[in-house]
Image 1 (cartoon, one colour):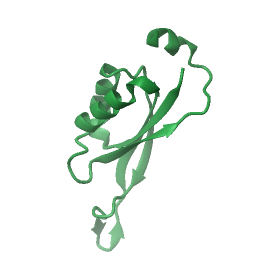
Image 2 (cartoon, rainbow, N blue to C red):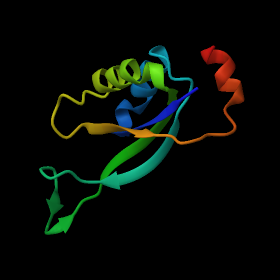
Image 3 (tube, helix red, strand yellow):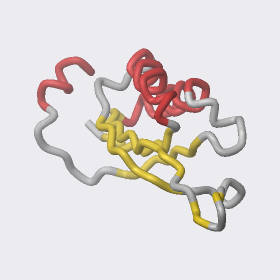
Length: 107
């Protein structure tokens, strides 16, 4: 079975909704990593000091056949159509281990 990794940068207040929506679309789980970043248009300053923009990186390892539906669910739940709310992209996965329990859910 072929897998893909969906990487989504999500606003912290939307992370739970994004993960739940992705699970509803076929993802079996997610890993959430706390992060900070800024987009090209959202650099904010306070008295000349840059403010960190909190974000969370959410990783989904999904079977290749459900990438489109999971990505669509992430897009909608994360409100990615609104400026500065987040981005997501898909990476190829050459091999993976430790996912045997997930494979029984997929089959």
